[in-house]
Image 1 (spheres, each protein chain N blue to C red):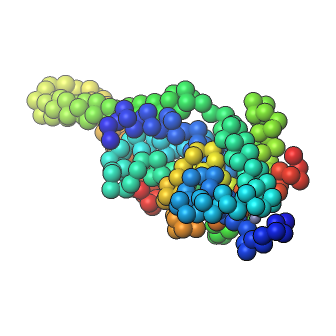
Image 2: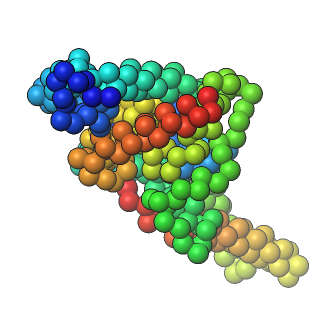
Length: 163
Length: 150
Ligand SMILES: [Zn+2]
């Protein structure tokens, strides 16, 4: 991929990658740093991506996600099973810029298990296909629909309870 | 709530999500459509899930805009090429200084003091070179993405 094309793609993916990283790390600043780290890595060594690795978007998000998981593991050296990490820790930082409605949504998301938050962001915020989601999260494609449905139902319930 | 006139064996459940996402086969789509015609509960769930998806899609889950990413992207590149540039400049100066040093020590009638000064300058440059080189090598070794599946 040409460097300019890659930069353009990265600029477009930045926002979604940041939203996903925020769900994993629970903090928008850490998430921005994490995305920035991966930008730096990918741009410094553009050859790390090639077409054998499938489409660019899921590949890039997978790298961001792995990097975030790495950061969490470093935070908890005792070992954490991030797949089942249900304590979201401090919720995503609220910002005045985010409307109240979105804040309620953010808050409801923090109540869900880690993987459910990510799958919702990947599908409903970033509009990835099930195949792409499976590739980012490294799960079987056949399980995406049921996982996503459970996540949506859980989020709906959370929102019904609190707004 | 199952329609009483025509009992439905089973709610469509997760297929509602697949339906919204356009990820069903034609047969599955038909099944969902038929079922929702009959089943209030699933029809309501479908509407709610659709609304939820829209709400998330329109939300601002990240307040970092494209311009910020574009700007922040220039950062690492500049930094990395800057340190490579320094490395090249210092290496070049080392070579020149080395030739000069050789000429001074063996071919000039300068005082010992002046020769020592020259050696100090050369030594300083050399240590600068090796510290930058060392840093680059460490960066390489401890590259935090080394273990990330890429
Ligand atoms: Zn039903």
